[in-house]
Image 1 (cartoon, rainbow, N blue to C red):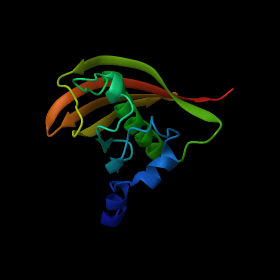
Image 2 (tube, rainbow, N blue to C red):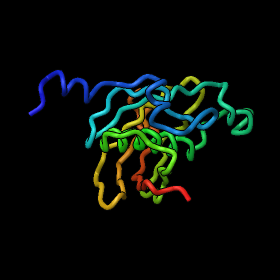
Image 3 (cartoon, rainbow, N blue to C red):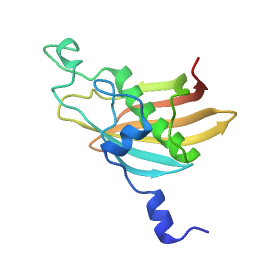
Length: 158
């Protein structure tokens, strides 16, 4: 049985410096700004602050900026990757890559625009033979923006 302090530590958040230890992504592709809560083996809550300074807005769309749906899904997957490594109790290394292997049941419910803050939530559904399955959602102000079932795998690099 875990003590209250161990449970609190397991559920604690992460700042950007800690996130950089768990994700190989860097600007302009790092899409998780803060982790609010991570419970290994269960779920993660993370934030993506959406700024007008994002490199994709000048082209998507110049007169009505909207965050591309594929990047919303990528942000959910990055949060799920952190949850995977926290669940394993290890940091990623240079000898492996965390890949998407499937994205199912994806739906976009509202546009994400500059000034929004995406609350990313991923729940671990299964981990068998190195295949990780998650249910993920992205919300803005409590309103569902996107949802997807994500399938990921850690594979050795060549």
